[in-house]
Length: 557
Image (cartoon, rainbow, N blue to C red; front, side):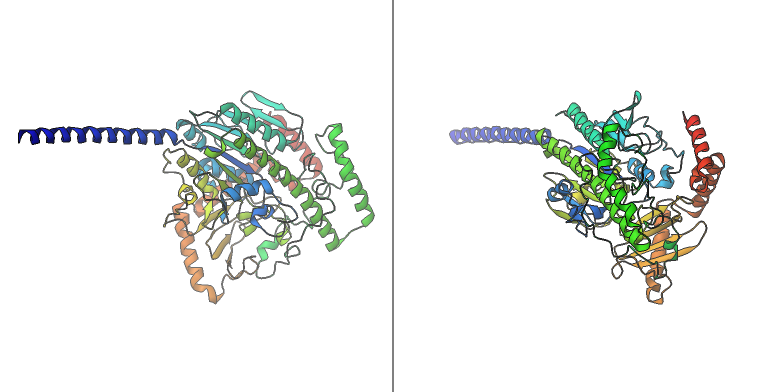
């Protein structure tokens, strides 16, 4: 009996030791897994005015004539979003929303009028990422009226709109100029900075902003003339007559026919390009000299002239895009060569959409599809299933929250978007947004697009134009994807209209927007114009404009 009892104790001790050993091994394994799992690096690439129509991954009429193979790589290896929408379709305000995770009326940067400045004393994702242990950088085009005062370890941005050729940059030491092409220089700087901060111990986040393909669409040296002789397909609505109860759409100055300038935009000019050196100008003239001579002989008018302007616009725009696509390829190749690609999430987007002849337009601003919708492609190895397409309503309002979620840090309650991380993981929350709110403020303006706000769902769009009018529009996006027929007031849509109004008011309350704020911004705009008439430069004579600009530049310095 004693022998059996002793044997029992031996077995018990053996099992206990084995169990402890197994638990110890499991603990070590868990620790190793935690050590192996690192927070991802983030490379956020944002171009300026890059229409989704000009990215071949999205298909469409331009995909075959002007492919973007490197940007497409992000979609091939990751996720392509079909319904990425912006909150305010204009450069600076879009970036302010990205910086803060807040609508324009909350972050205070509502328009691009001369003298507008983003308040960098407010909270941005940059400082929150720093607090979470990230090394942060902002490079290239930011266009927020001034240089960040906090939130970024590395700052090297274009002043204002920046220049395509021989651009100036502003860093923490001051302003300086470099010779070369902006897209190429920004790419080299991006790779150099990443290479200098890459570490197994500290992740990084780079906000990489391109000027291109913003107006005036000046292609780089390697892309000059690449689409000469190529016939670019026209959109069906190039000669839109704005019928279908769409009077507001006709009240604008952004048509290719009327607003696109022959010298600045189409490059039909004998004047040299501003800021070019002799070698650059010689190369430019070798392409555009013969084009100018041919145009002078053609004597084009009416629709023929509009078609000519469209072709010239698109050839320059798409060649500028090609430079950005090349840049993306260099960044992706570097990340792979440096062994960073597996733990780096790469995001490609634009500050908003852009018109490439649709409705006869260039530029953005409207809540209509081509300017409301922005490209969004995300590559995250090991998380996103390659070649995924997503149809959720996502927004630039969500980017700051996404960066913070990736950094595994808290998302402030006052941010108004939601993290895209669960969406990227293929687990879109059941309570994800079913409607997106939009608000555009910059009117009066050169392009004369009226102030408006509204909501978009997967099936409908409701828009309210205000300030100097009170006009509503409603579009059935399933039956009328081109938004050619305003059905507001149509009895067939009475119930839909009622529900959309209800939803619109709910979102305005949720996002703390209202008519009183609208009036405040209008009054602020009027006061700004009193102090600086140059804000409404399109109303001034060339002589008055030049005089006021000299005064403004002097005071700014």
